[in-house]
Length: 259
Image: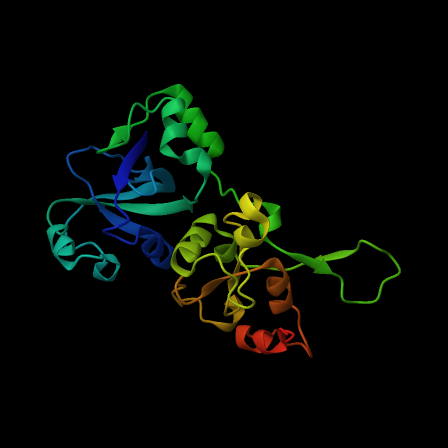
């Protein structure tokens, strides 16, 4: 069975909790979930969109059988309130930030209203719509390509910059932009200020520390590990000199002085 449940991102940092552990032990309530059920999580205002797809891996857990997730609660009082009752373990399948999953689009395709509690997806049109469009919707122009730096006799040969899965995640991008803003952290350019409406909300996201340089148990944070950068600066941050990529501060120092 497929379900939709609601979540308040002003109370709990679901994105970081999922990213760090891959699952959340969620209040089960009186609903009879079955192992293997698919659960979509709808984020309430101000987001108002489906952002997580999960699979039910465990049910009927008590507070002694769940992981301690106090650090992800934004209100300590709400954390202690949450410890009563039964829990189910939701393993993350995918997290996205896709405009097709916004409330108005879901209502146009079969959802009756904003989910206030668990909703079983019975409408075939809604089920097919979510199945088709619940996907990471990053565009190819979000990630830069630079000219091949090696010698070549052929024009148009390109080298694609390699970026990790977390940097490509549209949900991680949304979190980073919400926290850091839309100005490039290197040159301070803002595309809406320069190009108007077409440049609104356009920016790249750069991961400060290459994944291969940190331990696999390192908890990635959109606050400290991801920053917004313009395409030019992003390309330069991935351009190696003597085998080493420049840091943000080093690249800033390389920029021409403004007259």
